[in-house]
Image (tube, rainbow, N blue to C red; front, side, top):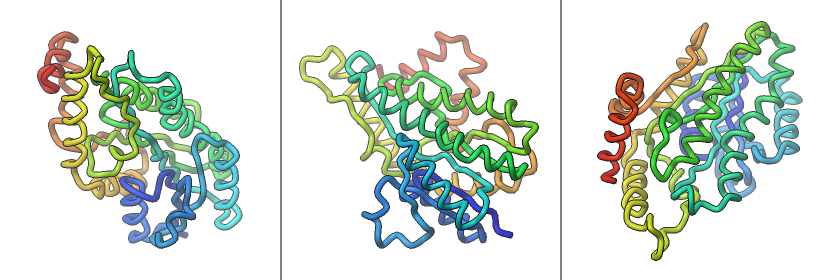
Length: 268
């Protein structure tokens, strides 16, 4: 019997690539979008209406899958938003929105599927985080914080659910060629801001990294391998060598030495 897989944020980027890859491997995939009615030509796999910041829409989507399939075997918590800006100048409502989508949202989806996985005595939750979760990046500090919170919460969930046949893991991508930059909230570069020059330069660099990122099929392939792994690891990193190696450097270098590396990288 084909495993039933739910991918949040499945209409583009990593979610779309992963769903397409898994469909070709014979899995039954359901993706989600906040506005699937605007994607009438999307026919790779079914897209359900789901907004991770709206618990009622999560419940409705999960119940629809269970009604059709009777089970959910894998949840790929992929939906997320980017946010950039000097923390001092980032509107607090935008900070709350980012946490609501990147942290509260995945938790709400987990809470919706976990009772069913527990009843099945089987299930796998893959939380898509970011290499940015492992370090506080300048002008991306809020994004780093949202993803770091999800990484650590996953560690706790693994231990809390170990007796129920449910497994949890994190996948932390580096820069991939997706449309996250177009949907990202950018705090404006203000002419009278003390952060104008450094933030403006950093913002340009961040957008270049995403535009020149790797093919998201690399993430899709890793997720496929995780699904077929008996005992997934706690953390997986995927991306360019130096992006992954930056996490190793943070472990072994003194804090201030690592901070200097980041400052030099961003030319700050």
